[in-house]
Image (tube, rainbow, N blue to C red; front, top):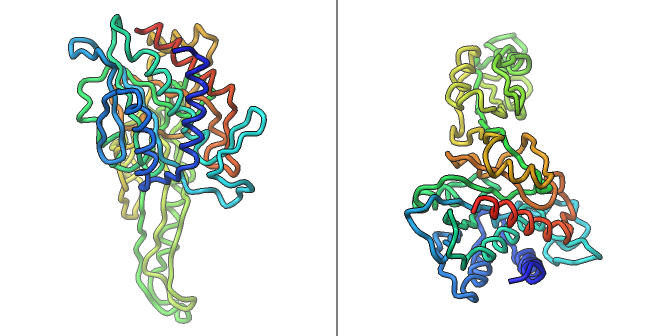
Length: 353
């Protein structure tokens, strides 16, 4: 199976994916489309909800296993689109469309790399390919749903647009729902306890506090108050002020530790929406990182979150396209980026396999 065939086939599949709306939670049609790619090649797959899992033909439980993962869902189209987000138009070397960059190019490049190795009898590792749903909404019906059925895993490549550079660390995420309590009263008479004023010292703490342990890769833990709501009408002192805090976590703290520190310092009620989106990192000495660096790829720490947060094994985030294009109007990927993605995935896996 030549590289050119793999590239042309990958681009054709990506155009079909773009033309098939697959907003998170509504991925049925694109899942069926991708499943057909394997069925047409007589490759056995398992489908759980809107997730596809395939194993190399000579998979053996006696060998360690590498997971290849990317997501088939998209966000909703940005209102700034000037093109049809589902037209999959090509202009020169540019392929336009929703999900082309995030993360359709990674999906088809990983599929192509998997097919390249599928028939090999001499692999030192097994390969499991998981094309999964609900990444954009951090849902439980995607990678988290199928992970328990994959068996022991030793390493993973997570396909996201990184320009094929090596994201060797990734921030985790905690979203806090906070409530400051007061006592309702008539504003004209100065009655009650204003919950907005009660919230101000806590909000100021979130603005100014610095966690002492700094990550060499990701820097400091970052906190931002991003939403606030209080009051029912102008002449009533509000008894409740609600605000939301976005916290980007480094590997120096567990999510539980972060919440415990917050609760020790603020007066308001603090409720984390989830503690499952942990930070991740991989040793730069890992063979996959070294293989990528030998190809001239750069390492960096990623500020964005992916399905890496669901993995508890060494993992590397990398894929064709650029993170800056994700969720943007008139999203696009360059056709040479897909070719480079396929070639690079194959070279790195060759160094391991």
